[in-house]
Structures are given as C-alpha cells and as structure tokens.
Image (cartoon, rainbow, N blue to C red; front, side):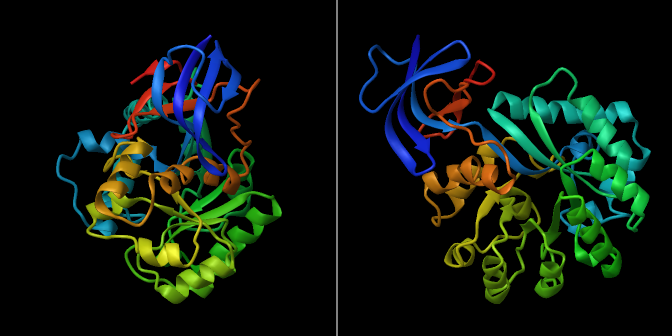
Length: 341
C-alpha cells in the first residue's frame, strides 16, 4: 500500500492527514502521520473540473499567431474569426486540436469539463469522436447551428447534451431565447449563457431566462450581482481569457455578494485547458481568495452546481485525487490516471 500526506481538501476545507491507497482504491484515511514514508506530500484534492471551455477552437492557435484582442472580431457569432475558421476548416484539423486540449486536461487531473459546443448536432458528434478511448468526462452544453429557434433541432441536441450554452442575449432575438430556455427547462436540462462580458446587459432579461449559471459577468454592477446572488445563480470566471481582452472580473464585489464562483479556461485558441493555470493566475494577480477557496471552486462547488456525483476522499472509495505542490500549485501526482507531474 502506498501513502500520500499533507493537507486534504474536504467539503469543510483543508484537514491535515494522509491517504493510504492500493491500485485503484483508497484503503484508509488518517489524521496523523502515515505508517510509512509517503510517496508524495502536498495539497490533496479531488479531481478538478474545468467549468467552461471551447475546445473546438484549439486548432486556431496554430493558424493565426497574433489573435485580435477584440471579442467581437475574434469570437462574436456568426462572423467572428473563430466562427469563420470553424466553418471552413476540416473536421480532422478541428478534431486533432480538440484531442490536444483533452490530453492536457487529463494529464493535469481534470475529470470533467463543460464545453460550450458550437455547430449543433455536428459539433456534438465531433466532441464524441475526440473522446474515443478516453475516460475524461465531458459536460456538453450545445447550441443551435444558427442564431435561430428551431424546435426540432433544439430537441435533438438536448437529447445528446447536458443542456444549452448560449453566446449572449446581445447576439439573439430575445423571444427566440425565451423559447429555447422554456424548452430546455421542460426537458429538465441545464440552460447557461455568457453574460455582460464586453458590455453590460439587462440583468432582468438574463434572470427571466432562468439560467443555471452564467459565464463572465465582467461588466455587471453591484446591483446586478446582488440580483444574481438573490437568485442563487453561480458565475463561471475565466480570468486569463478576460485578461487577454483587457478585462477583469470584480472579484471583491462578487465575494461581497456571496456569489458561488466556478472557474473555466474559455477559448482554447487563447489559453490552454489546464484549470490550475487559471488558479495560479488568480493567486498571482489578486488577493481576494485563499488557495482553499480557489480549489473549492474547481472541485466541490462545481460538482454541486452541475449535479455531479460527489468525489469523496474516504476509505473504500475510488482513488480520484490529485496531489499538488503546495508552493507552485502544480500537480505532482494524478491518481485517477496514475500520472506523475
């Protein structure tokens, strides 16, 4: 039996102790020092969740060396650079890029990722192909191929996805969005959208869509965030992507309003899909959150928000954990995939 020791992240925060494991199973948990020298020492956390990705655009980083730092020009549907390249590039090219992003997540102990999947049914088929012979778990948030409501198309993509992930209310006819939201909820699926990223959008219109979570909310004011908090709607932050565009979330205001915060890496053509790079970025550039709070935001909190099975670090459980170097916050052992950092 092997041992690891250090600070174990529980649902109630860090607790000092050790884990004894053998093969694919945790055998024991202790609060003192392990019976023999631990194989690794560090911060021990459940497998991580990347709560917002667009892995379909990974290939673009190899096609354009200098991307414009303008949201509309780069990713705005339907005429942004990203969408034009997705339309005219080969499936093989897109697929190879997706596999690279998936491999990086797997290497770093990310068990789930939420992908806002472009391209309607074809986009879902593409991500299915990218995951062949791979046990990382995608949470697909699909969207219609065009910016329009087609009941038949929505029903088909909902059957094959976790729910709907919309670009923003500014891109759509609002009445069509309402129809999509109503149908999504009727099918008991998730409805999520980007909100107030480059401009402030009407929070009441956003709330009326009954979103399960929002992405960004950079331009939201204090009143907007208070309303979001009152409605218990989580926000997914993507700090490195925001920085690329010269934007910054108001961490202080979000924390003051007790917002449930998750983290994602956003567009893979801008950033890699390693969620721990996101955490390190926030630690380096802000002083709002503790390391414990940040790690909760990529483990226990998203599991609850996304209705995933809890990852229990306890005896007789599967050894789904990652050991981080406590200074660098880099994975040194990924138990799920038996990978060393």
